[in-house]
Length: 318
Ligand code: TXA
Ligand code: MG
Image (cartoon, rainbow, N blue to C red; front, side):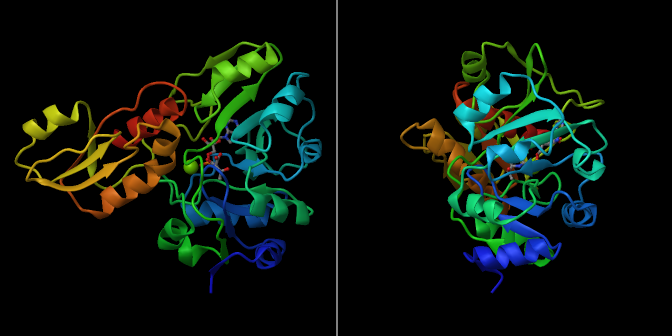
């Protein structure tokens, strides 16, 4: 059986240079020994991911950061204390220990300590950190259950460590830690305002630039299902597309129309955290329903709703 909860099996496979899917609080990762280029190459091959797109390095103890970076601004310790383990990735100047393939040739490295008991135990049992992007094929929807990974990457990994459904559901917030300011490269559960409050350092959002993205993975097309997604007022869109087989992705409301084939409601209680945790699964289910069009609406632009809206926008861009 390839899926299981056996940390020793995962450890042995990683030590042998193989790929293992690991649970985190955000999404499942496709992990390999971050300090071994030959193992890391397998991640890019399995995902069909371009080599310029760098990976996040996962560690089990805050002190493991030391070997990965050359220097860090003083405020970084405050961020670590407050948010690790948790969905915050720090981009810092990299040390020589980090292979270039991990950093995509950049002189920085992205590091985080995931908040998932099984994965923390695994990381603490290994004597190397784990490079891990989300365990989905390049540009497709991120996996939030072991079954999602099995469906798409099952033949590419030695083992899937099953840690249940991811509680946060969208990828970590990524910040680049400069001496005098913090650049928000990707939105997630942890907000720029919180980061500013804890550090007293200005955190600014970086606009996506497809020519030269700050975070090379932040292309405007991403998370894309096979069906086209339109975002707007769902009731109006249903009227407009009365001749199409529709899928609906709503925040809390149920819609009725004869041509609605499938519907996903992210949180009938209008709870943003619940909506985020359900988001990627909902997209997958809608994709599997083979509709002509998926009609969706934005969540309130606050808290983790912003991160979900960002993913929804990318999923709808063709
Ligand atoms: O929640 C998460 O962060 C998940 C779980 C598995 O930890 N991982 C994840 O990895 O989302 P991935 O590869 O799908 O996204 C990593 C992002 C990419 O957009 C990449 O360009 C950016 O991190 N990144 C990695 N290293 C970077 C660096 N040195 N400078 C700027 N961006 C970097
Ligand atoms: Mg990803």
